Image (cartoon, rainbow, N blue to C red; front, side, top):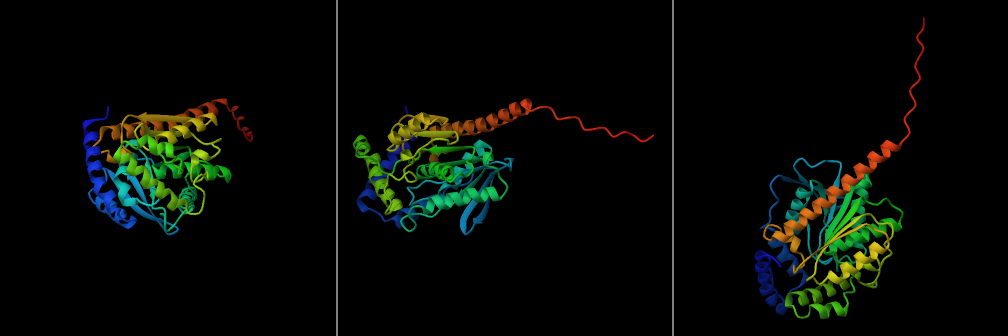
Length: 326
């Protein structure tokens, strides 16, 4: 049963989406609204910000106090490939990084329709390669994202694998958008819920903006359509009430059949993007704690593997002693 705080949030958003649906605001209007809303968000206490540019692309280091410098969370924000920015997700990424005890690199990848596929994927790959040039090892990088950013994180893994590039230690998808096709069956399932139906019809259009002339079922647009073998460990979180739930479950099942270690965590009755309301909704804070536990588990598994590998190596031969001159 969702918390009272979540129910209050849902009622507010349902009331707010009615006028929006009737007015059909432009993408620029929606973007402006999100940017204005971000003015009321603040970084968590003890989290520091540093702006950086990666070959002209705006990005930010979001560093919790005492976070180790050798590991990084590469974060790709959501927004249907058409919305969202560093501003809209800064507070959330800061809290996620703080709970995980990791520094995060957030990027402002290019948005559709001005920059359709593969612009966002190219920017994500650019950021990952840039981290490698900065001295980070692939096993010290975790890629994460929410909604479209979660789908983009999964597409990044597939693109890196297909290009025989080193893969990161793991990936995290928070309600990831794994199938841009968004089947009619899914639309019917949520048709009784005004907020979900509006969301489904809206993001179906946004998917078309991003795909442009490329088929929506292309595996780098819809990762659920891809061959998923040899991917690193995945954490997927989704609510059973979300529009994207069926597709996330399908992706998780397919990844498990391909031999990918998948941690699937489902929540009950929560709206899409519930993670972003971590200050208000206790379920969001619980979800972030589960993400932190997953990242800690990745590092612990690496340490254990290194310990076992070290214990099985043959002992080094003793250095020859020099005979002293008499």
